[in-house]
Length: 79
Image (cartoon, rainbow, N blue to C red; front, side):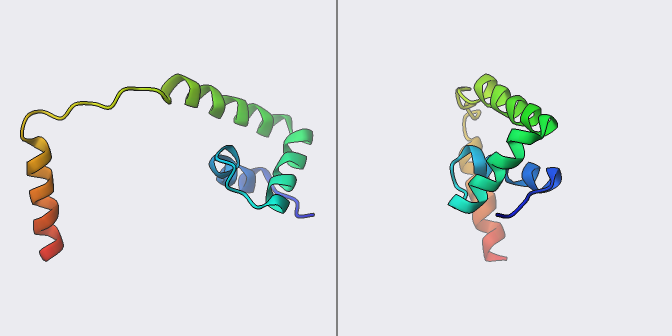
C-alpha cells in the first residue's frame, strides 16, 4: 500500500472528502489519518470550515453586472 506524507495528504484532502480517490489511495489516506494526529486535526478543521461556509446563499450581482461580465468574457475569447 502506498504511504502518503503529510504534504501529499494535504493536497488530496478535498478529493478524500469528495470520495473521489480510488480505493487504494483512500485506504492509504485513512491509514495515514489513523496514525497522524496533525493530519487528523487538519481534516477536522477542513470539515468544520465546510460546515460553517458550505451552505452560504449565493451573492446577488448588481443589476447589469452579469451582462457586463459576459460581454467582457466574449470579447476576451475573440481576441
